[in-house]
Length: 202
Image (cartoon, rainbow, N blue to C red):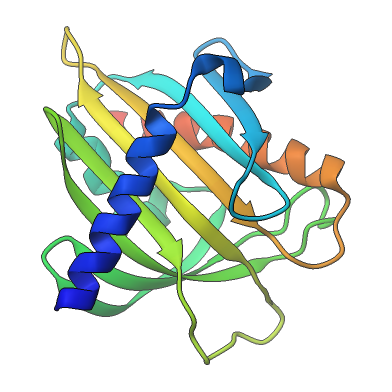
């Protein structure tokens, strides 16, 4: 239990440190009408840490229920093709295995991830975060990707809206051109908000 607590607190501290980075450290990667994606070099690996932000018309608890591993995520996230909770560790903690679809006309082939996921209170909202862990079982036909510390902060605003801020740094692995990775990451983060908003309206 101590190691689990240590892992959770380390992950939370890392995400909070990203959340407090100076604005000058980020450069815009993609901007739509209602979502902005920034990026900066990651300190964890040779790729980028992406930051994304947008307003979602719902309360933080419902939004995070749709984001974290559970009964909703697979049904609305267009990038996710399968999801299995491998182990429930504690309240708010689990190990989840999931697969993602190919992207950019399959220049980026389907990927598999196994993540430790942790959800906790943050200020007057919630933080749902995760990091990849070692797992021996490997799904045939999938490249195993690796998520360095990632997470979503969701805090309430006025008029029953919430500010949803994400920090994503995914090593897709395999021999991929960085330009293709940048295009795919920025595009999928904008689509994430579109899919989520649509699902919450149903």
